[in-house]
Length: 73
Image (tube, rainbow, N blue to C red; front, side, top):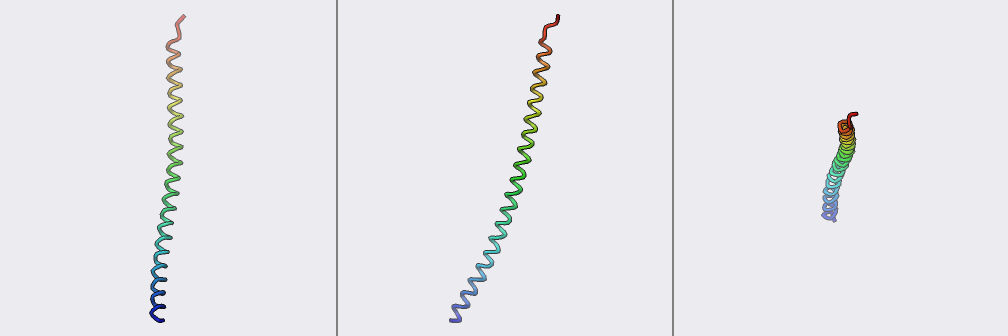
């Protein structure tokens, strides 16, 4: 009987350690997920800004070209 109790206590100890390790891994995963989500948002915002800048440059170039092709009277 004592042997069974000792075995159960050992298993309980091992499971407790595994539980703690899994909690730590989960916290690390959540931290990584949060970091990646924030990075994605920052990159998406930068992309929108760059696209806006490109569109503005295209509009300026088109306006400049149309001004240059206007016939002189």
